[in-house]
Amino acid sequence: DAKTTQPPSMDCAEGRAANLPCNHSTISGNEYVYWYRQIHSQGPQYIIHGLKNNETNEMASLIITEDRKSSTLILPHATLRDTAVYYCISLDYTGANSKLTFGKGITLSVRP
Amino acid sequence: ETGVTQSPTHLIKTRGQQVTLRCSSQSGHNTVSWYQQALGQGPQFIFQYYREEENGRGNFPPRFSGLQFPNYSSELNVNALELDDSALYLCASSSRVGGANVLTFGAGSRLTVL
Image 1 (cartoon, one colour):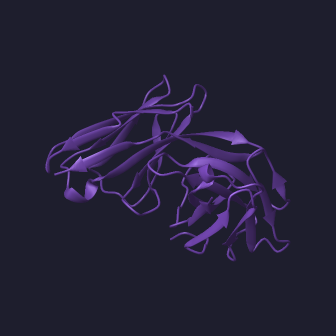
Image 2 (cartoon, chains in turn yellow, red; image 1 turned 180 degrees about the horizontal axis):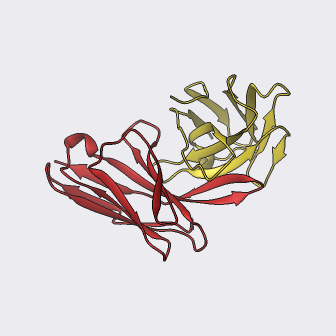
C-alpha cells in the first residue's frame, strides 16, 4: 500500500498557481518525498524530490512541513499541458532501491 | 525525449501465449525496473535488475521474468498470458540525483490479451 495519501482530484485556472497536497504521516527519516506526474498514455515523469528542506527546480517547488508529515507541490503558473495525474511517493534513499509504490495520485485539471 | 525507449508500443496477444517486451535505458544506468499499470490505476512494481541480477521483486508470479544485458537493454517476459495481464508495461532506469534515486520512465508498451 502507498504510504502517502492525496485527494483524488483538483482543478485550477490556467496561469494561476496549483498547490497539490500530500500527507505522509508515517514517513521515516531515511525517506525522500518524490513527485512524479503522468500525462495521459505516457510514462510517469519525474518532477522533484526532497528530504527536509524546501526545493525548487525549473518545473516546480516542493514545500515540506517541519515535521515532514506532509508536503505541497507548487506549479507556479499552471498551463493546460500540466493537466495530468500527480503522484506523491516516499522512498528510502539508502541503497539502490527503485521500488516506487504508487497510489492513485491526484488528477489535476487546468481549465482555460 | 526521456532516454528510455520501449518496444513495441502496442501489441495484442491471446490467452496462453508468451510475450517479450524490450527496453533500452540510458548508458551508465545500472538499475532497471519494470512496472505494470492497469487501466485507471497507478503503476505497480514488478521487479528490479541491477548489474544483470534480479534484486527486488513485487507481488507478481514467476511467469513474469526478466533479463538485463551489459549494453543497458533489458527484457520483460510473461508466459501463459491471462486476460488480467492486459496493461501498460513501463520500464524505468535510475540515476542518483542529489543523493536520491530518480527514475526515468519510458513511454510504455501497451499489451492487450484477448
